[in-house]
Amino acid sequence: MAIDWIPYELSDTYPHLHPHDQRIWRQFVLDNPLYFDEVAYGVLVGLGQPVPPDLSPEMVYDWLVLTQSKIDVVARRGAYNYIIEVKPSAGYSALGQVLAYRHLAISTLPELTDPILIILSDWWRRDPSLVIDYYAILRLTAIVPV
View 1 (cartoon, one colour):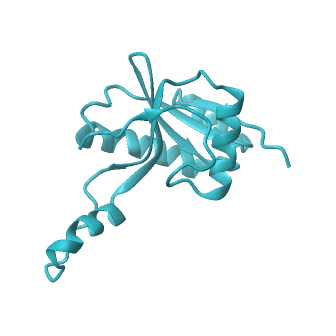
View 2 (spheres, rainbow, N blue to C red; view 1 turned 45 degrees about the vertical axis):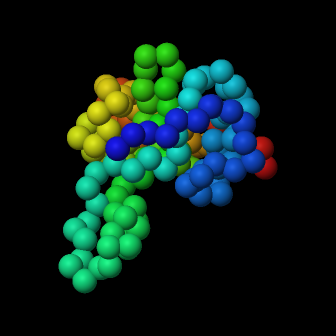
View 3 (spheres, helix red, strand yellow; view 1 turned 60 degrees about the horizontal axis):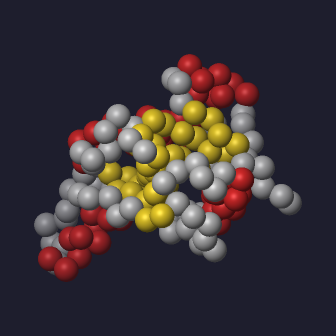
């Protein structure tokens, strides 16, 4: 499965990101216009759920897309690859997601070698931040104006 890279740039919408996630990502892009070279949104990883035997051939792809895990943002800068979870008030769930995505990406996205993990949030919970730092995951903040 190949990644559909697009330029890293400001946009009115970002595919596959929830509305608040979009506001956080948009603010990050505004604040850091040269941070990445290219990105991809809603990148599928993993195997998804087994296809039900009664599913029509036309629906098999849709089933897999609906049941596979989706990385919010995959990015590149030079030779470096990044897996990015965008999460308002980030906590343990964001940590679990990026760790799982790295594991799944190793087997399903061979072009994404040795990815650096990032959690991007507008606010950090104290205890999860300690654990996130322990795993050497980058914590980036985008302060979204109210």
